[in-house]
Image 1: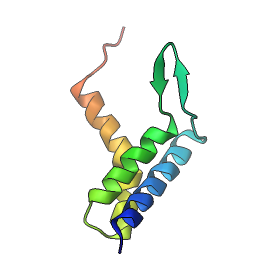
Image 2 (image 1 turned 120 degrees about the vertical axis):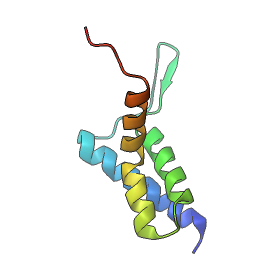
Image 3 (image 1 turned 180 degrees about the vertical axis):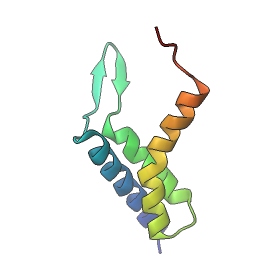
Length: 84
């Protein structure tokens, strides 16, 4: 099976995760000279993870689904914000 199928499956997993988590898809935007990728960022992460996992459709979908949330968790642990 083509590796692109796994990338697309991972992207679909990430898209579904964004829709379930937020209830909507956040559109990309440019604000104050900063680009916010919105749901496209999750799609990219999901596609990359789906491409590199162990090459089964279920794994590609599952890792695409949890890929962005896992990355968010790691970033929050590495760079904690100060509460006021």
